[in-house]
Length: 570
Image (cartoon, rainbow, N blue to C red; front, side, top):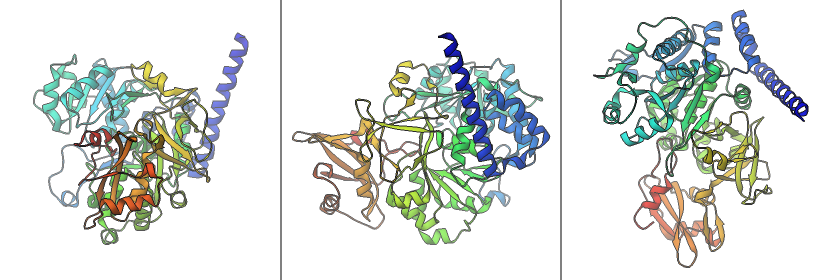
């Protein structure tokens, strides 16, 4: 039996190695990656790929060797600043050689402070390019990067630091007051509370940390981790542990191969860098030797200006951002030269079918929708043609990813029926940090679920129908919020919609709709009810309509339905 197990392990290892090589050859040939190789780059690949070392920090060593002077990162500045106004603190751009050297310097400095394999480091930094220097430095020395929202309150910071076991906190200089408040509650030396983006009295700055460091950091990249805490729309957030398994590089290439992304692209990072969407797409860009331009914050018109000024090729946005662009209208779009832009990736929240069509009609067929989660990585992708043929779709599974839609008894559901979405692929996390129970609950035979419900249509495209915990049961009928929200979005006066279930004596639950109307347009309850009745079965039609100026969302664009439930009368 032991011999059979050993043979099975050898066969599995050989199969996985073949998958990595075949993916690299297939996608690499499509992208022309072989043309990037130098002898030094080839030697680096020969040393690392057979071992399965795929930590992103190695990408910067590779491109520092093969294309050292290419710009790796740049901070987006306004035209006023570019014309001579005061620059923000710190450098605004780095080549791949400079970026790799700085990553080493940060890694060396932390190593001298005893931060090594497995040590947790909390990152509370705004959208600054320093974020993209610190995170790979941690991976290089085998530490665990713990990116989190810089908007976190002092109690939230305390929870994140203690739960993750952080030994260092890099914090944005603008949130120094929150760090001072929480510092006395943490077992972290004050010297390990390091400001980024400016000096803060009483604390070490990033520049002071690295000023005297020179040389290569110790390479512990095989042990590096990223622990990304989920947004915590219900209860305490959980830390999803990503360890960059042997097939992570091949998994990333599988996604890239399904898209228009190309070597040397300029990518505009507009989402928060601590979020999985920005983290993933910056990683894809670096893998392709591209340039990442970082916006400090998203605003629609400055975004378009940045696309024009930096000749941006790709970007990743949440649907709320896409809605803001659509609101600008054709005249604002026509004022800019946006011909360089060939892919806008939408994710992080459901993309309504009508919004996708409206955006493509305005910006061209450049919109790609993807589904993924912090825990699963990218699972599916929908092309512009998919979005036109199957409005609201999240598309097809990317190569190497398997999907199961399961009912409450664990059976796969047929086409057209709704089931809980479970995914398995090379970008899956290992589980939740210090929460074996939550990990077991989310797993099913190696497949992972974050509680999303989905169906597969006749074209083989998947559609998200909402969260399992948000499903409404009205009169014994399962009501999937995404279906109702999709119908509401079809009304010309509706800009945004979200539905929840509220208690009802007769029906158990009834559907309540929260709506944001387009500027200058109006629609009453009776008109909306009539619109829905022509498209939805009786129990699915919202009984109540609440009009808001905006929907409550977390910083990554997800509607906070707990806040809707807490509103008076909900």
